Image (cartoon, rainbow, N blue to C red; front, side):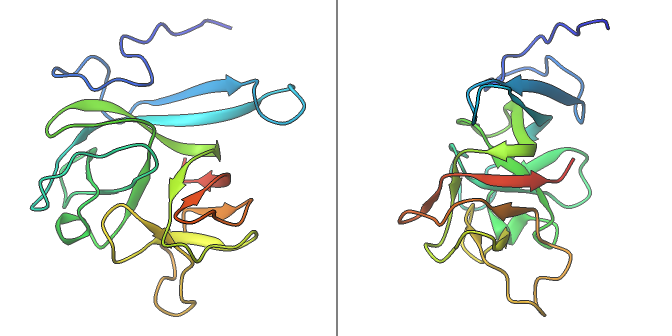
Length: 163
C-alpha cells in the first residue's frame, strides 16, 4: 500500500492551503486501549471565526459555514443549521487551514456538562460545545456517542461517525 505524505501536520494552523480542502486522512492511534491501535479520520478545512471573532481550540465542535465548501466555524449563528463538520484537534485562527477529527475515538470534546456514557452527542446552542440531544429537536444532527461521562465540561472519549 502506498503511503501519502501530507504537507500539513495534524496540528496545522496554516496561513496558506497546503493540502486539498475536503481531503480525508486516516491515522492509526496506538495509544488507546490495549495498544493495538484504532483508526482516526481527519478532514482538512478552512476556519472562519464568525461574528463571535474567537479562534477554535482543542475540543470545540465545528460546523459548516453556509454553502462554502469545507469552511467551518464554532459560531453557531454563522453555521449551516448546525451541520457538524468535526471536532477541533488544536487551535485554528481566522481564515487558517487545518485538520479536524471526523471519525474514530476522539479524546477531548467540550460539552455542556450534561453528557453521560452512552448518550448521543450533538451541537448545543452554545458556540463550539456538544450536548445530549433532545430526541425531537436534534434528529439528524448527532455526530457521535459518548464513551465516558463528561467531567465538568470536557468529555474524555467519544466515538465520532462523521466520516
